[in-house]
Amino acid sequence: MWWKPSDEIIVTDDDFVSLDDSQLSLPRQSDGSLPNIDFLTLAEGSNLIDAGIDVGIPFFGAAPDIGYAEYNPTLSIENPIFINDAVIQYYPNPTKDKVTIYSETQFTQPLTLKLINTSGQILYSKEIKANAMLNFDINLQAYSNGLYFLVINTNSKDYISSLKLVKY
Image (cartoon, helix red, strand yellow):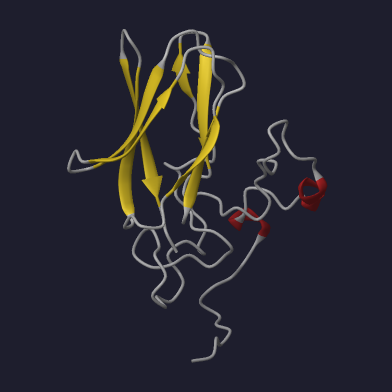
């Protein structure tokens, strides 16, 4: 099947959050990850959303989007979890094969980090000692597409954050 241009889909500047290609040469973040940019990200209400053809790759909505990434306003690249004065972040989200967990500050108390599926099964667990900083990956290749929860237990509280995995 070949793609055939159609008068039904008109692409305009308004279909994108940004067309500023200078974002492509921004430096990496302090943790070494790529910069967060919105170049060619589909804008809310774009007629390119749900306008593609299903070729067997996972997508959000009624049909795939036309563009380099699926539009989904509920997902983000970094999702901080605040624990007292420290912040745990994980990226990328969505992801296809791994998620990186990191912090730029040390935790004064020990932590237990768990990845849990929607059935409540613990798929991954890691003990983190007091006065440690985080920087590790969780391999997700063995897990199916879907919604997962990242749960962090401290001596005093449980912190829960939703992590949606999109594997393609």
